[in-house]
Length: 186
Image 1: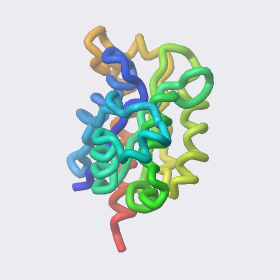
Image 2: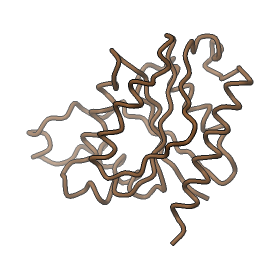
Image 3: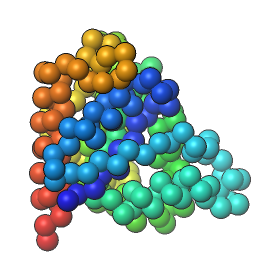
């Protein structure tokens, strides 16, 4: 079974992207285990802090990602781009630079996102691509999951209730699982 680290780029408990990550965990095929990880405790990047040592929440996240078969980024879109807290977490995980190959090198990555607006996170998803390229990851370019009008597909408790959207997420995860299986073959 492939193990994927899932990260939501929103800190708010009632975030649609946190809810989408929970739905992904639920809808993943039996060949795929998605382990949701929080970035809430990752401090703002500061070179002075790095000089004193990598903070424990960052070290744990880096080690878990390094041991995983892939990464699932569940990204909101803020001001037509990627969320700062999520980029900050990725930046921290790339420190020191000598760790990039161990943590990110060749790592399969999938991106999905939800928004209450009409934009469907397409700009944020595209904005992640140069970052992922720089880190040496292997982005998966299957069918996109970009959910506009998220308030219509999630209930008040954050459950993905729309059958069509659930089917889209399931198809996406099935495809990512197949990509991971191919990536693991010698």
